[in-house]
Image: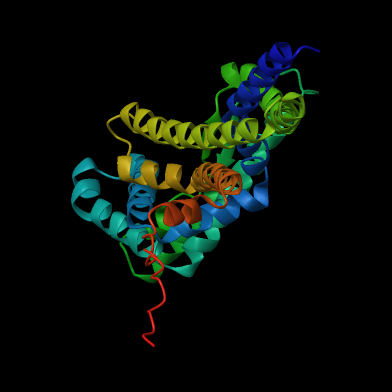
Length: 309
């Protein structure tokens, strides 16, 4: 193969490899990081101590409990007597170990329900994916009764189901999830294969290795930029009644692994490029030092002194 053709093919393969690096990292994170229930619960567990998340959960649960007991009470009594007690009790409940247990179990149940719906195609009926909040309501009711809140025993503990995935979008989400599972496995392998093939075909392999390393660092930087842009877009599209700090905390927790992977790619690419440059110029500082070293002057030889007889 001619040298010019080898160089062009090598450059194309290296460029494709660097382009697939951020896409492969993103698809692998979505396919393996988010689809593992244990890892997901572990990632979400610290948010039970986040003040913004606790306040958002307390407001949601408090409003739901007040709506459940609303038909049995007068509106004035509900606003003046029950509502403050309910919200205070729920906020107090979010600071207990029982809330942390309920938070972890709720995340586990929700994640399992979503995964079953995305992976199970045997059920042709399109039904929404829901999670039951009755266990959390029962614990809040018990604490209200222990605090002697009026009419706490009249709070109905019903199987309140919250929609996680709408039925009309389930088919499209299943297809997208299967694409992510395939891409999460094959895109990283393809990126490595293209990089190896490009380095093998390169005429000047040291220069090709430097280009691959810099391209990898650029891909990691673009991935970090994409995560930051996705965060801004997610917060900008939220409804007015949704807590932005709570959603930001959840987004940051879920994308922490992706941000770490992006900075690892940047550091790895820059390190390899620097090492390649140092190996190429190992004695450059010594040459410069030798070129500026002062020259020593030698005295001219003098004739021997004459001896008079």
